[in-house]
Length: 352
Ligand code: MRU
Image 1 (cartoon, rainbow, N blue to C red):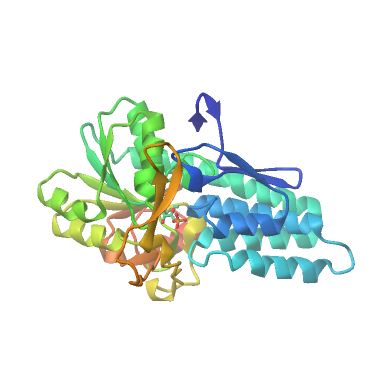
Image 2 (image 1 turned 90 degrees about the vertical axis):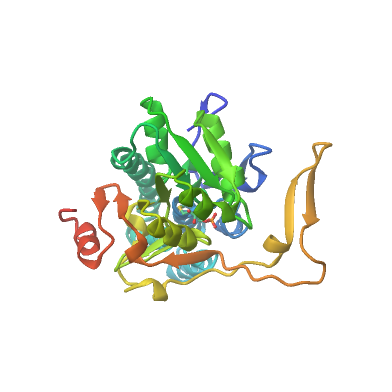
């Protein structure tokens, strides 16, 4: 995607260094950072400098490749096995992370070069899949539609294009008049900060709405469709996505509004029979208690926004049962969220 006229991916590998857009600084500053070791790349994932399922997958693959390149002959397997576990411990929910570490690890058994090629392929495929998701999802978007989205499943959350936002970008480019409601997405405000920034860059008409406004706007008939991303999709179609997704899906069903999930096949986890076996990340209570932003003097500031001394609970994801989902937009087509369709998708057979 273009930022100030220059094309960027969110994360890329050059030699043994990973370069990435530091997402914690957006929308106030656009900064590219470098991590030269797999340990630094782990830190980038844990601290959410790189976040979003596809981008996490890409940097996890690159981190695995960095470990492979840093390993010596005498303890090769031991070193890269340990690194794999460290990378996988950074964030537990996004399936793409484990997909990437497994693929690069297996390639490393053949050669170091094969590991680097595998990591690059994962990133390239993520971008290509996102572009295809845009093409399939665009077929659902009609002139004049108002679309709600949650969190950030735009190009920042992937290597390029995004999932939930990819169809929106394509529809906008084709001249369809659409309007996007971006859920704020507390506590980290990925919607208010990242989705809104992306939509601004692309010139897509939009408004940020408080997280608790979605059901009300749906009841007023102001929303025609909801599209969200996914962090892990179980074999029966139950979908883990950013906390707050579930209540949007329930409200959409109540008001008869189509609710779509957009995700590449690398987000599906056939080993999870249903949503109850998806690990849900719990993050620090500080993310709820404090907010950071830019003050009137233009300086970054972190402030307490809750009752001093109170504690907070911060589950980072929820699971939307498949029955609330109208369809899953994948790079191979739009499928029903059920066991059979997902099995067919993952077996490279025909989709519905
Ligand atoms: O915690 P994050 O920002 O890494 O959240 C993951 C996500 O980006 C969202 O849940 C998104 O909607 C899924 S699509 C990448």
